[in-house]
Length: 44
Image 1 (cartoon, rainbow, N blue to C red):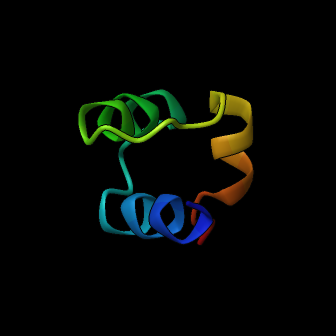
Image 2: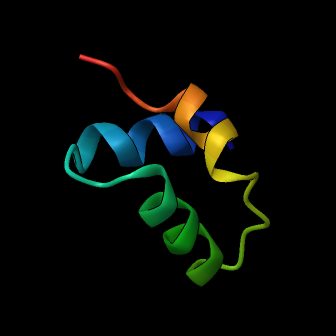
Image 3: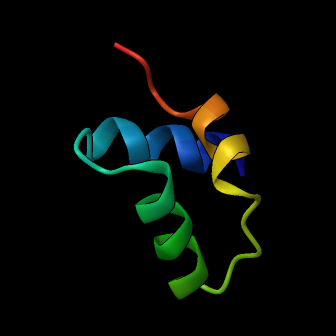
């Protein structure tokens, strides 16, 4: 899950943690809260 979050945030730099969470829900994943997603997002 961490690698997927990192990859999504790197490929879509304008997406917020909430947007990534919503995308993971659409893909039938059980994502963590947006604060946790923020920890694993790509940071340039």
